[in-house]
Length: 183
Image (cartoon, rainbow, N blue to C red):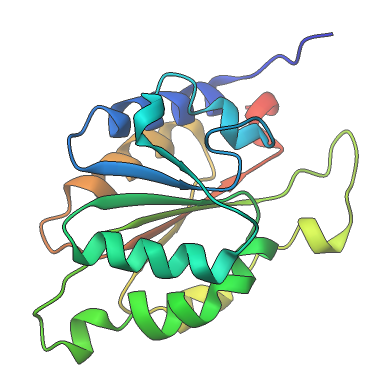
């Protein structure tokens, strides 16, 4: 039985395909090169050479994300659920969020962090997979753009803006797992 995806999913796939066409992007995370999450399916049209598969080591992944951004790449760092991103908070809050400040503007690391609020339908995986920490992270990340993608029409413009930013401000974009097939 196939899963029917909706416009929300289509817009995510369109966004990832567009980002994959940019010369300086790289996708990093768990299940970016191999099946494992619904987010994997949005990368189907991205050249495999741009996919950097990571082990389950979220803080390490965010550290690599910071390093890639400092070196001029635009990493799209994928954490399938908020609850996984929690394991990378040190690197996110103390480093990516502050690099511009403590380097006195020498490093302006543009990065796109992609995470999601885990789906609860048709099966609820419970609290360790369905957290939504958007408000809390907005207060902890004053130097990042934090945006929740509530509607299909929000998706492509948000990813395009994150990539095209001239201020190189990192961006954290939050998706809804349930909307992949519902909107």
